[in-house]
Image (cartoon, rainbow, N blue to C red):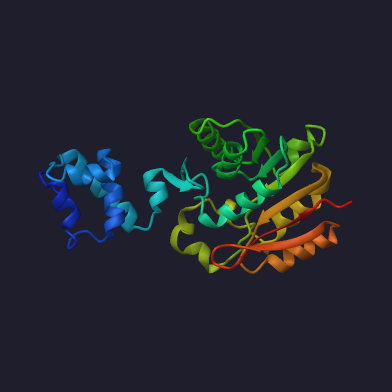
Length: 280
């Protein structure tokens, strides 16, 4: 066992010999189980943990030691300054995707409309709606479980987002091919069999949201091919993709007749997002 009933909070955080997690993760798990802030962990350092709390902490520590992502253990992750509910039904929002949000905010016209394809936790759509309450935001996902989480996140942050269950654009076809000023997407783009799928956090995330079970470009191809009928005049299509896919995505956009095809670098100087304007 990592924790013992009767130990103080100070002892729980100092027993590095029996706790294989780093200080930050230890503190986060203590805060989660005990319902205390970082400051309260300090000011209540002599508080004694109960047998029930010790058992809960041991269980969470073991999950983390087994490799489960902290976001799933805690049930939430920060993205663009907001906290989002997450579960194994959705991908964990990552800082790299904030580039897609920034680009979208720059290109979304006043009182414009935007659709987020494969919304997952709803992070992109909710941030757009929070930052731009004048915009009409729609979010699509094939997974009913993901949409439940996305709706909860929209409610958590008091944002107005329309959610539709959809296999990419299929629900929009039923809406008389509704057009938007902006389309954004963070689709599955990892190549089938990529070794990273069996490493780190990816082992615990929904496989269908990570890989297209093909060459990594099939979802991007479909999004690009069908986008023109759902984009308003001069509308932008923006997509996140893999670290080595920018040139291929720009080529797909160009072949489809899109204008101003280009890619943008993330904080690691990787071409992470590519996009272009609707064909004339």
